[in-house]
Picture (tube, rainbow over the protein chains, first blue to last red):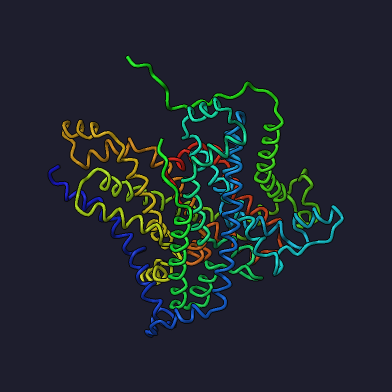
Length: 285
Length: 290
């Protein structure tokens, strides 16, 4: 249409402006800052690869990486796993389906911060919900947030929070499978669990792949659960909280940026790796 | 005429309803999992009506004799009402700004053919890989220099920028499916591009605007990381930042903590019950973000 150019520019300009100022420029500035030693915002000195050398000898970041990977493992195995099992079950029942969907999805809409605070009340040594149950049953109190348990204690709400999200994605994928596939399977005498393993799961494999990628990139961003429940102490430091501590608490903008860039690169590499490992053909109906 | 086969509602044939051990087990497991969602919620609301001593000693007992002291503390001493307003203003503004900007941009990307369109799409997909961690320090610097830090704008602008990519991709995807005839008819009627957008594309795209606004609202409302850094002053801080503060400042006042959680969760729960169908539909329309 005549005069389209004017409209294209008009429509895109505000977005381009806002995203450049608050997203693209900051991203490249972070990359730039990662090569500087800083004192506040105004005093900085170029140090080449020094920050990256520090990164690779930093024991704390090694630990934070391992903790993040451990949570990622729990998320992939339990969050995606539970979501898949529940989705298969929901797909096989005829009553109350929408009730369960609504209930299961609910934690997704609550803020992670509120959930974390809830779990603080559960885990409390003297008066928490868990220890009350345990002492009522006649057992000794357990220190839930000890050196050895903390990371698992933080992983539980993390996993619980998003099960419903992946569940709905799986259910949607399953509802797209044409019903004649199931009819045919029925004629072949395939039913029950066999149907799930031979038909449903293979057909939604590409969705499982997407979900696992989402779970990986999502876990890289874990922050509030760790921050509220344990402040990253007792062996729960993850990359998100470590970056926050370096960049914001210590005001070490240079090294903090280096950690952030490391998180981006690490996250992208993991996602690519997962996609390579889970390679599967697209199925179209 | 061809026989019409409805492909919209795939009805799977099931065995006639009959009690089977398998499905009984399924219902039991599903109910058990739904209890993990429902019970903690009940527990926290129930305990918010008790004094701290009872929360500690009798956390399972029903609050048959409810006390409201925690609620008065929450509103008087830690000013939770203020944080509520802050959250609503900032997340609401973010949603509106995102919808307007992404509506324009999505329209331009989906209904115009121009050089560089593919490039813009590639850039947008790459943008999804940039987490808030990788922009926070320079954004903080910009906000300090422009004195936006600890003002509403200090959270609204970064969050808008952060959510735009997702919103543009989803809205453009939806607008691309709108029939070309509609556009042509409007053109013949003498609409220019601007009128076409306002009179046709925006109204037709209402469903996608609805689901985008729900997700943007949730992500903005629940974003602790940005809130802690950009707007952590008492007068402007949103509810999540206050919750984080409570956990460190009032960590021994269990009744107050329970109340703070209850006050955060209950309104969300009520709204959610009304629009849950909508949310899940939105999710399935491609509104996916980790």
